[in-house]
Image (cartoon, rainbow, N blue to C red; front, side, top):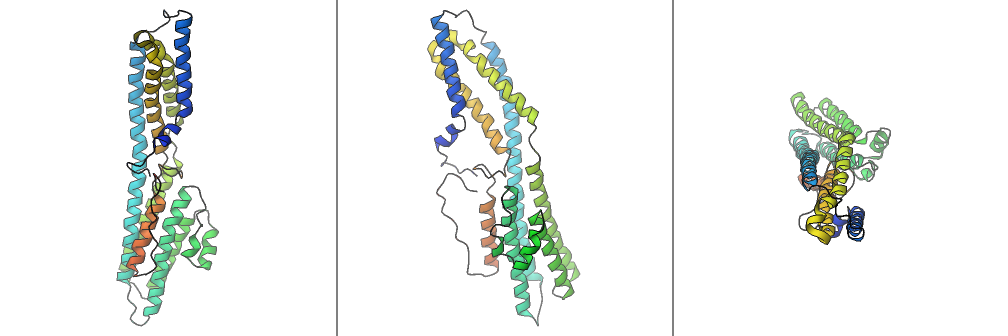
Length: 302
């Protein structure tokens, strides 16, 4: 996720530097041809690129809005993951009663809570197309690691382990059936959040819509020099370049926002959120081994 006030101008310009260079050269060639060969009669009414630019502006506004909706939905989902992880831990700590096996209870609670922390990291890795088991051995046992490694969907396998241990807690009499239902509903919400993230990840933005906007945008840029040269002369070179840059930046912004799980600076900060979950849950466990918050030295967090 990009941070306010820390985004370098080079990050923005690098997104369109090749296109801007080509547009500047193209516009300069148009101006040179007009002057050198006296082709000033080859022009188009300014109203033509104006109308086309207005249409493109509306299309880009719609696309940017839809792209931001996808990004914001992803952030809302991960906010729910944080809340449900806290709820899950609170339920485990408050519901369980084991007057004659306090050590067993604490061991069971620690195992479940650590697994939930691992699930948060694993889900983020999975959505980014990375190894979902990376670092997971810090939070689950070797036996559980062997179990989840045999599944394609690692986070879902971890939730299955939660469900199995929940059944064990009922059989041991640590929680009653009503409490089991409450905790299982929390697990269901976590599973729903995972499914929503996977839906966003696997549903691509309509390619034809992107192609049409891209084609219309470049057609507008090709026409623009012919519409303004008779009014501004050589100033058309920087003018057309700057105007085209604004349109290109808006389009590129939408392209990056529409995919919030691609391990890019514009991603939903899943790793940072998972770290927050780990700190919160370990504090609830009264653990003294809290992970340190990394110092933010860049213009984004992941």
